[in-house]
Length: 276
Length: 337
Image (cartoon, rainbow over all chains, first blue to last red; front, side, top):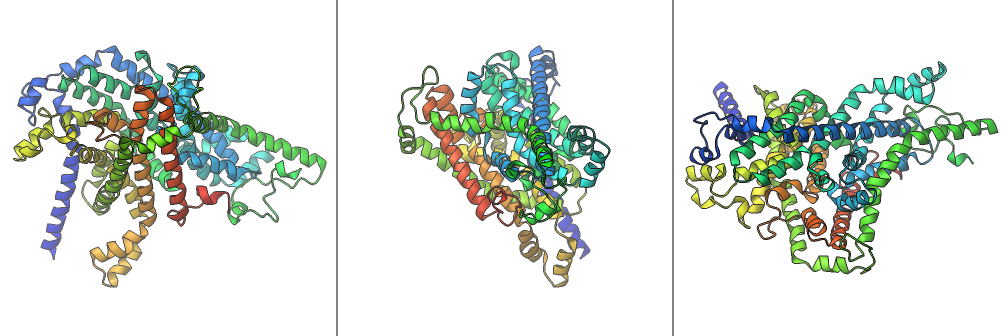
């Protein structure tokens, strides 16, 4: 019995290891290859580099364009998050805590947004942004991203706001607190965990968006990281090691963010998926 | 006109049971003119809270759909006046286009593979990691990591891996004695879709695994123990207890896989641009090609509308008939109940 259990434990480990190799393999390959020269990539595809060449990485880190793209992505992510969380929190407050005519209709309207893949709207969105003169303007990316983030954010926040007892608001009103002050001074601080979750989701979605920045930004000075990665690959398509180094560096902020915000990210995604 | 006034939440209300018990602020019924005014004022302040989200949503989510519907009826290059009204011509052309029909077929192919291969694989991994296993927290974190990478980074990474001749995939199959696979991957019409699916699995299975893990943790230990006592083996416990109880999670997973396949763009555009010879093109890619590369904006808008209709019909159908049991306040039941 013990031997059988040991064998089963061992084979479970073997299977998990195999899956881990499948997932981690490409990532490790990219990191190591970034330390090679492109010619060594062909002669020595699997092994460690004969000479650890740091030039690929340091060259990119010394290039202002890379940092520019990081800054653009970060700025757009922060802008998107502020817009979508602020607008959603206000709407979710009204939809969660006030009974008014048409409330469910409004809520349903927002949840319908969940069913639209972003790709559906991107072409007409481009036409609209062109008429509003928002091309080559960060707002042209921030506002649509914020709008597409609303449904999920409203659903999560409304669920959370509903769990806060009505007595809290009644007591605040009794003490002469208005709706806006209650919302700002009491509800939002109480909802910090939920706000953290939806912010993390908004940041990741914005950071990874490619379609919209690709269309909106013609001017390279606005390029975000995903667009920059694609451009870089086009530009240095034969210098494989350099391209791999670039994507490794492009991954670092996302993976670092994941390491810090893992709990909120996974909690939010699973909650959002099951509630949505 | 009490219709525009906040409705009372205490007392006899016709709303659903849920609404009566939730934590809404009680507003007294407007009996006098003064309280009627107060009610209106309260509605106005509620409206203020709704306006920013509503405006954003109308302008950037709903308006584009209206624009696409309108543009889809015109033959238009994207610049200048849109005055060549062609009715349904774009649509008849679209459904006669072998490439677009192929796009739909390829979407279906990815959906079928996602449901029959990727989801079972994710479920299998979730069950493995739901046991006591040394380092399982690390494994979970690792398996989920590809999901948070951007599609472009993933696509460039695998473009490098699958480079014909120089890529590590070719070296790997060469070392394994499978030279027949060399130089194919993304470069051959016959292998490009399976390769693409492999990359999708790499990127997305961890997300579905996380959903399943959350579902598995919601299954009470006692039920499984009771099944054990009744003599159910490991497979029977999985088949007759775990799997049915995971039903809601599986249905959500399928839904997200389908929506994901419908809008698939980043990965394909960067890895293959739809090639070789349209053999990996998706509907979103077709729309992009016509709209932004060939300047047939009317035609591309028609593709957007078709994409939209497919998503809409699928979502409504799925929510109505498949998710009905799982969701409270879902789109199709939210207003009517």
